[in-house]
Amino acid sequence: MQARKIKLEVRNVQKTFRIRGENGEGEAFLRVLGGINFNVFENEIVSLIGESGCGKTTLLRIVQGLIRRDAGDIRVDGKDVTAPGRDRGFVFQQSTMLPWRTARQNVEFGLEMAGTPRSVRRETAQNLLALVGLTHAQELYPHELSGGMQQRVNLARAMAIDPSILLMDEPFSALDAQTREVLQKELLRIQAEANKTILFVTHDLDEAIYLSNRVVVLGAKPGRVKTIIEIPFGANRPDLPELRGNPEFQRIRAQMWDLIRNKAEDAPLAAAV
Ligand SMILES: Nc1ncnc2c1ncn2[C@@H]1O[C@H](COP(=O)(O)OP(=O)(O)OP(=O)(O)O)[C@@H](O)[C@H]1O
Image 1: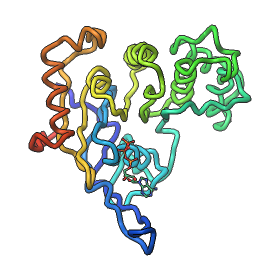
Image 2 (image 1 turned 180 degrees about the horizontal axis):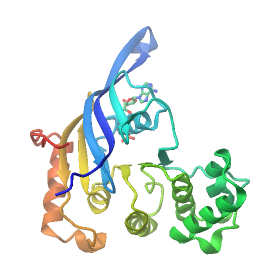
Image 3 (image 1 turned 60 degrees about the vertical axis):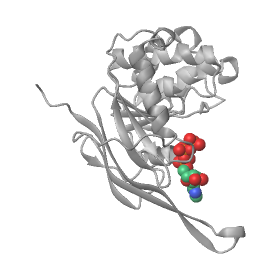
């Protein structure tokens, strides 16, 4: 069997924030990440879950290159990460579209910054907007788009620079339940069509199981990897409402819930994290 290619390596990443001391006086230290280890393989979706405050967003921002780690290594395609770069694309919880640009112009933005010729930019943006199902909305401005449509544009924009990995921080959590389910399904379709590798942060256990090949469960204070769960449903997994009735889905969900509530012992980590 061919070895899977590692896209993202996270090795012993640690972070402590300097914060105000008790009663707002002096200073104190908050150890947020206590040595995080995991890999994301090519074409995988890996989700990070864990209780609020366990450091998911901090970890994603460190991978993004926006927060400096105190120790450890992060490599994308074997290259050390020290700052934001075109090898990583981002989609956040809130839409980050530029309000004075149309959907197409928003998708073209990163390519413009990179000096890509106009005709190539336009074609790339049109292709990506078609991929995310927005051909009809290319020339609309953000205020003319629904929240779900805006997140589709943000996804197309993140993909425009053809990053090695997409980092997504709760991208659907501000959407209503119905739109969220549509976009979750769409993300699986887009990921399969475009062969993308994704690191995905979510609070939502069902979303993590439905979208992921593997789920990294983090414990808190300091954040650490409790276990990494392989999700056994293949590429043609049923839609989430149907999957929820699957006993294996329910078993995994219960296991995650126990881990997050600290009811279960940390499971031994597999060698190939
Ligand atoms: N810049 C900062 N300075 C000081 N403390 C910070 C900073 N950023 C985050 N923290 C603290 O680090 C801890 C982890 O925050 P983080 O946002 O990474 O957690 P999270 O798991 O993403 O939480 P949630 O699920 O609620 O979004 C929290 O206690 C937070 O208050």
